[in-house]
Image 1 (cartoon, rainbow, N blue to C red):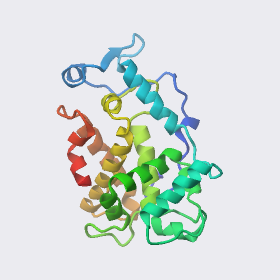
Image 2: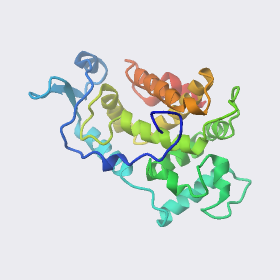
Image 3: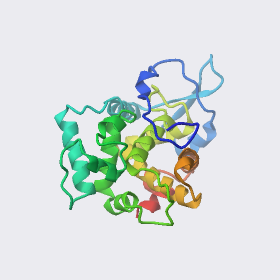
Length: 260
């Protein structure tokens, strides 16, 4: 996505621009709030930084590192595992239609920019394909509703489904600060706790986000050039929901109900 407009462009891999362990900054948050709802996440202040950093338990740190390893995997069109996943995505998306090759004009039906989806995966890496496949398999009705644009009054110029999915993966990686050694924001700290209790938390949050984004799209009567504004609104809503005090699992988020 280009912040100057609503166009979809390939986004640079985050790991190319960030190095874990660097001097990170953080968004200020309430340590008292953490004490109420997240007893195993501690807020500490560095002597050199007035803003808090968030320490993790060993279990949370292990889960975060496992997810970070997933984030670091680029999509490789020559990798048989990646090829199989891409084929599986087509099969579950269009079970009645045979795909005539992993490079095919048919992919445009799903909302890829060209006949080779690998060029779009460069922004989100292999995990963005995993996210789409998880969504299709775990919440098939919600997935098909979005893919087929079945709900609401749709715009003349709709967002391309598949490329929007890659952008959502990229946005979540940024929002949750997954390239940092430790969370630097309250929402990132909350997510690490949720991740330690469900290793598929990122994938589930992805599904929630996709449905929420589509709801925002409809409520804003958005069109193609409004996509960035819709994504920003979606992110703000996600951050608000993650900070609700009664959220102990992703299924408690108000927007989770959109998947049912």
